[in-house]
Length: 501
Image (cartoon, rainbow, N blue to C red; front, side, top):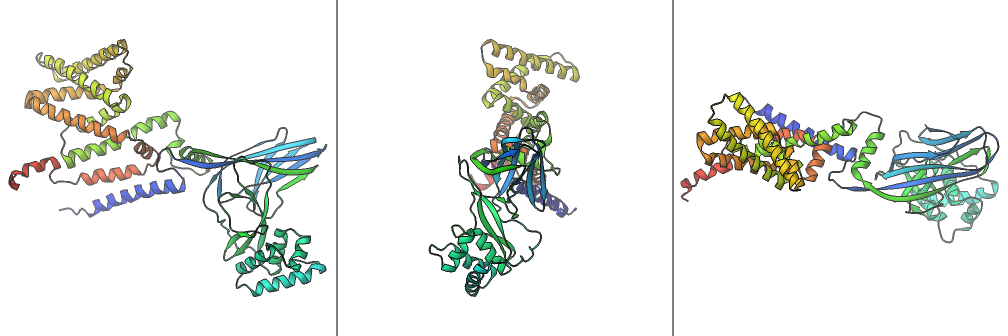
């Protein structure tokens, strides 16, 4: 007797692969697990304005690169300007240039952002210690006293930064701190005090996202490197950390806007909150990726539509195998109910049932006449196929004449399968009587109805097309049920007499 261990290992591998790939697709590619989900996005416009002096003009604008937001779409509006997007040392910038520009100039950069929930930036290397800050002689003593006090009250670089933040953002700052804040902004003073002790820190520019806000400016903040990661501080209000509505626009400490050949330059921001379908957003993200991805989204729309129907067949097959092998329902043909269920999807359930019963009933009557003619098998089946086409044509015309538009959909029934069903039922009638025909015909319709209900469920259609790994799970379940050799559920009634009932 062969060991079944390899079989069960194969089934387990198929299930694990199917579930793992589906979970990976949902978490990594952000494909929604349920249909109809919506996601929140932000559309942000950056408007660069300046007065050109009449000669060559170059404009450089820092672009957002924040792990808390993923860029879905970005574009610019800059008539007459050459544009290039660059990335160097982790900093993205838009570079506009023009040979001759004069007067007022307005350039626009628009980006659509999707929140990711990943607020922590990953750094490949630990930043080098900063150069000590050179304090003017008038500020040296005050800075040393502030540093000494904060250093003595802290036990780490992060604690030192927090003590400095508390001193800078105090409602009534000390005389020493008031002296420094009189000559520096709060972020500049905070960063200079940190650098004086060799603590890595950099100034970053953040944008608070608020729906329908216009003419907003960036907010200067400070990131402090401690404990292997960057910590965000806002010295202006004394807060540490960030919330979901803060976009870090520039993080490398470089200037946000540089203009050569112009004056009075400034950049302002407008923003709008929006919601969009999660699946469409996921498809946009996949299309933005440069690497190859195993996805049906890469196919033309016509082929995608075709696969949406084909990928439902394994669901119908699973239902048929379960009802036949485990429950014990008899059907006319093995997978005829699946094809009938596919036709029901096109016709709707009630119209499909009526159409199926009409066609099969008429077909059986005509088939009974053909049996008296003693035709050869091939001729008889061919005649049944032609008769089925004629019946469908007649019912379609009648439905059109009576204004029953639903009746026109019976043309979706698989004609060859119907003809073969009529042939099988007719033979069954002759050999085992009408009771067996009703039993197998009714079983076929019941299985087809259940298969239709499973295949037409919105979440099932969503899963079989967007999570291809689920088909490995279905394959494993079908193989597992193929090993079942026990009694069917409907056969258990045979044991009732033994139980004394």
